[in-house]
Structure formats: C-alpha cells, structure tokens
Image (cartoon, rainbow, N blue to C red; front, top):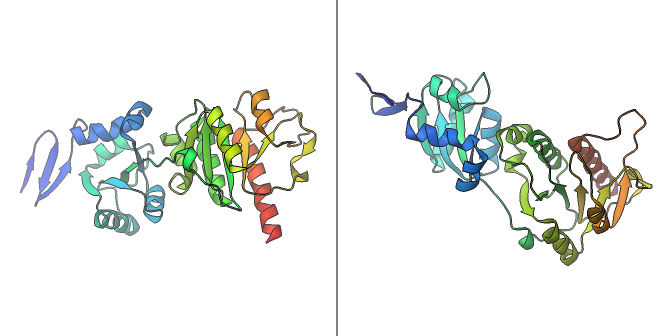
Length: 280
C-alpha cells in the first residue's frame, strides 16, 4: 500500500521524496549558490562519471542522492551501495525532483553532497618532481575546471588560487574537471602569501608573457616549480612578473593576440610533463 503526502512517497518502508520543496531537497539545491557552498563547505555533483571519481578518490561524501526511476545502470547502483557502505546518508527522490537538482537534461539518477577539500598554503611542502599551477584572479569556471583536468592528466601537484577567483566547486568547474576536482590539491592565498611561500620553499616560479624573449620550449624545467598564469583579460602584472624566476613566451603567428588561459596552461604543463618523461 502506498501513502502520499506533499513531500514523500512511502513504499514498503522506503521513503522517496516527491516534493521539490522538501527541506532536504531545498538544502541540496541551495548548493548551486557560491555563498551557500562557502558557508557550508559542501557541494553537489551528479552523474555516473563524477560520482565514480569521488568514490575512487575517497572523497568525503555526506549524502548520496538517488532517483530509482532514473538509475538504470548496474554500475550506478553499485556506486550507491558503495557510498552507503562507506557511511553516506541515502536520500531517495523521484525523477522529477532529481531533475530539479541536475544540470543535465539526461540525468543519470545519482548524485552526492560532498565536503570541499582545501589545503592551507603555508603548510604545503612541495616535493621533488612536483609542478604546481598558480592562477591569478581566474574568472571563468569552465577554464578552471579544464586546468584541473589537465593538471591531473600530467600528474600535477595541484592548483593555487590567488586573489578573487571563481569557485572550483562551481557546477561548471566541477563538470569541466571531469573528476579532477577530487584528485587535485587546492589552496588559496593572497599574492603576498604566495610570494612568501615561494621564497620559503625555494620554488622556481615560471611565468608567461608575449613580451618574454625566451621560448617556453627553451627552458629546462626543474621541479619543484610553480607555473604562474595570469588572469584571462590582463595576464601577469609587473609585480607578478617580478616574482618569477624566469619569463617565457608561447609563440603565436596568427591574428589573435592571446591564448585562452586553459589552453596556455595546458601547453606549459605538457612541456614540463614531456621534459620529465624524457629525463626518466
């Protein structure tokens, strides 16, 4: 027998939320706001690939959200069981409610509320062979997520966010990261804090500028190092360039006068990666 009220369906002991205004659903939906993510230290992701990445990287998952009608994948059901076994709370919702939380039209019926992971830069100790990326005032979540994905692909140490940056836990950044949000280390700091950290750790800082004389392929990249990449519209300021141990340029022969930040960072990361592969 099935009973119905304005928020749940109850079927043989299972409670399936059927109202978008249910408090638990509203709390999850509120995580689409950066203010709420910052206040709670949590974020919501949905989809098989991202949830699988969270499980693989042992993310701290608070809640597993499942729409039984949509979760037709055996792999997805196994993910849900794994999360519940690890201690996550199970919240079951109807397909309609899940669609109200999802960012994709073809929702796959599984999502998670997870804890954000931040490291205090002053406590980070770079290890030999590591390459970090520092981003100044990055504005676009898609760019940030793509950089996280590329950094993960080359075995990068993580990303340091300087100044007033976009949120790496923004849904667009999380999707663009393709799961790297769970594997990459994240730190945030002011430029002064970053400069002091680099000095204490004796890290080589490499920056990019179209005016630099040295081609980016002409430098011997010796980790531990940091690639300092400027903001999308302005690049590196004079103060930021002064912090760098060396400045390099990425040649361009077309009509465009600059590269997309994620593309430029990817070029630099793969040069470091290829040099390390050649040396091994």
